Image (cartoon, rainbow, N blue to C red; front, top):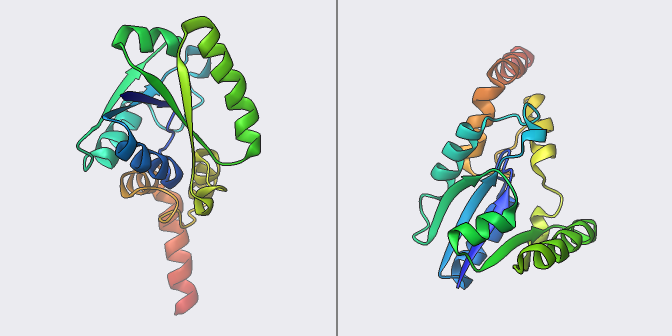
Length: 173
C-alpha cells in the first residue's frame, strides 16, 4: 500500500522526519507532496523550488520515499496519481481536531482514507512556524530540523547568524 504525506514543509522538521521514517517502514512507498496554494503565495519563507530541494536532500536516504508537488485539491492529486492513503502526522490533540475535519472532508469528496501517525513526544512542540521564528533570531535549531533544513535556514538568515556569532565572540574576548 502507498501513502501520500502532504504538507507545506516550510521547512521540514524533525517531527515530520520522525513520522516519515516510521511511515516508510509501514508503507511500500511514501510520496512527500508539497502542496502549493495560490492563497498562500508569498507567505512561505522558502519558495516552492527551495522546499523541494530541501525535501530531496532530507529524504535521499530513503529507498521508498519520493518527493512531488501539486496545486489544487489533495483528493484530485490522489486520484490522478492513483494513490492509496493520505498520511498525516499529529503532535497534539489540537492537531487532531483540525486534521479530523480535513480527513472527513477528503473521504466525503474524494473517497480517500487518512492514516494518522503521532510524532514522537520529543517533537510534539516543534512546528515549522516555531523553527522559522527561532531561526529568524539566529537561535539553534539543529536538533529540531534535518541537516538540509538547518543549512537552508542558516543561509536564509545568514546575516542574523553572523551578527549573533560575532556578538558571542565579542563576549568571550
